[in-house]
Every structure is written in C-alpha cells, then in structure tokens.
Image (cartoon, rainbow, N blue to C red):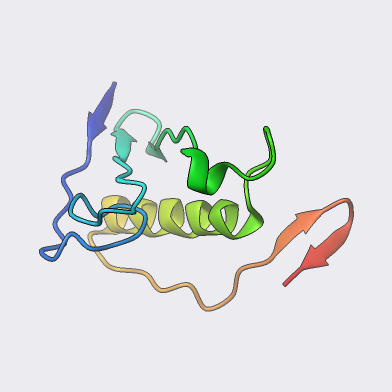
Length: 95
C-alpha cells in the first residue's frame, strides 16, 4: 500500500517538491512499504510540456534526481546528494 511521504523541508521552495514555489511542480512522493518503492506522478503543465508529448530533458533529469533523493531519505532516513547523473538515450550519453 502506498503512503504519502511528508515533505519535511521547511522553506517549501524547491522547484520539484516545494508547495510554496509558485512556478514549481509541487510533486508529492509515495512509499510502498511492501516493495520499498518510492513513486510520484507528474502531468506536465504547459510551461514544461515542450512540443506536444515531448518533455524537456532537464525536467526529466530533475525528476530522476528528485525521486532518487526521496528514495534515499525514505529508506535510510539520511539525505543523499547526487554526485553524477547520466541520462542515456539511443546509446548516447547526454551530459
């Protein structure tokens, strides 16, 4: 069963998870305690939607980074920091 993870960050200004960021995505994250999987759902708004059904790669990468951070925090109780992140498409590494 999925349970919403409380957002414990006091300023709430994060682009991805901050409820008080007026241009933010305001993502909520959920932990499935049985499978230990963390998830979120996001339907792009017009500013982030790109061309038709194409989502900007920077937003995609930010979503990957955010879900990794919430997973680390939920499962270990510790904050994690991304030191390197590579997104691969069509066998090409995109910096």
